[in-house]
Image (tube, rainbow, N blue to C red; front, side):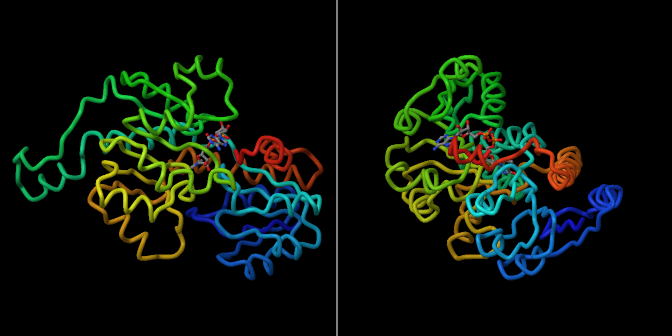
Length: 327
Ligand code: NAI
């Protein structure tokens, strides 16, 4: 049994090594960032663990005997699921390792924006205390947060925001109205989320239906005082349109944990991450000791289970085709 880790961002992969060796297998660890490297690494693997490497159709076609690919994470947009399904290869994610962390992180970004923490910290670091230099602040209680996508993370965040006294609206085409009521939110159209929200927080998967969901037209409909928070995937936002909206004051600011291009520095990315109306974190919303331990253990357990002919609990092949959700 050969298991390949195409790439990872952990301190080490001892958890995986111990599990694979206990199952009588052998672990190979790579640092693939491009298709060719991934294809070479995975060609004779029985199972693959992958983080950000592109597991494209070409990589999948190079696999001679792979039974299962497990993505270290929730989003699986780095894996060509239809290509894997055609080859009879299972694709799984780890759907439940960091839900508290990501919803806390979205809340933290929202509060940093609403309390204007960055301008205030800048003044404090300059040893200046004049409130006249602060942007306008509004009380959070009573403001409206629109959630785009309200699955596991969105619903946890809804509960946390309700505790702060915020009104919650949800746009999620696959969510049932009763479920929405249970979490104390109102199910509305995308347009109402855009026009009525003081904050919009994104929690949908990235796929062909959600790419650039927030673009020029959407920003134009938002309140000029509104903030956008994105802890889901960078591709949900058209970043050129976001930069224009920030520069022209179409919206008040944004808090991003994810950007479209995480591996390559682009002038657009630099302009965004250094923008005075932005709070940006380095795709660390998921990160905690507890989440990391759960992620590594659950990912490797699924890859071993899949090779042994069991159905992994994070199986995505059918789910994606039937619900258009990447989990
Ligand atoms: P989930 O699958 O539980 O929820 C996603 C929700 O989005 C579902 O309710 C689904 O119906 C909805 N949805 C699907 N298409 C939609 C559309 N076109 N418009 C609006 N809603 C739509 O997923 P979960 O676990 O809540 O994760 C949400 C996002 O968070 C994913 O994009 C995932 O990749 C991202 N994530 C980010 C992390 C980070 O470190 N920043 C860590 C973990 C997840």
